Length: 284
Ligand SMILES: Nc1ncnc2c1ncn2[C@@H]1O[C@H](COP(=O)(O)OP(=O)(O)OP(=O)(O)O)[C@@H](O)[C@H]1O
Picture 1 (tube, rainbow, N blue to C red):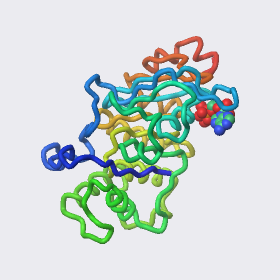
Picture 2 (picture 1 turned 180 degrees about the vertical axis):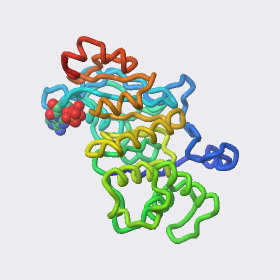
Picture 3 (picture 1 turned 120 degrees about the horizontal axis):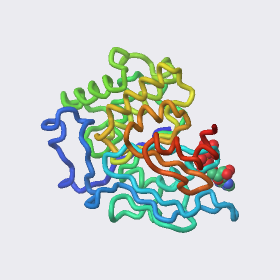
């Protein structure tokens, strides 16, 4: 399910120029209303989550930089989903801090507030409005973003239409805008949902196993899509498909979780060569 948000920002922080002087509107790396002076958008420090004494996360530390595309891998039960749940406020850590920018402690915010602050999460299974067209799905996402001053029944401006058009191209659904979303393939629904997230211009995007269940061709296209978003958004991807992770990680950092902690972190080639990672996850 996509979590929709509508950041409650003072009008002065809303950048109305973003559609005009930066080319593509989705191509704008924004940290509106967020203090990222030290370059990080997310800092998890010593996060522990105990379920009846069992530590799903155990002193987890993680920093994500503004504009980074970080892949998180690790065996089943390593704590990847629990980590995403802590970031989005679904699970409260037993101890530790989770900062969004320099000043916002996510552990003190509700799930609803966190979504409104601009952290967008896409769960593994796609949830689109099946009875609506592709175009309407994107339109509805934009209209649910309260920063955009339109009602559900108002007409779209040419700028808004342009933005939908850009996103349609990015998610490879241009030419399919009149199709019912329910008729799309699994992969196309996933892309549409990513497009719906992008319509809301999130500050941080969390993707949970985006290529699970996709065909090889769809997986390859999803890698292309994420590579196009590289440097334009701050993105955390949890994924088990190592071919896909290699494609999107490129020279960036990959974090390996194991038993609730970071086991290894570095370039994909480095973590793939790490004996401990081979032992617990990748195999010989
Ligand atoms: N609500 C809960 N109550 C008790 N234990 C839980 C709860 N949620 C998660 N766990 C346990 O915490 C550990 C971490 O689970 P988590 O789902 O975060 O792992 P994961 O890395 O996402 O695994 P997968 O790759 O299979 O999705 C697992 O052992 C899981 O059984």
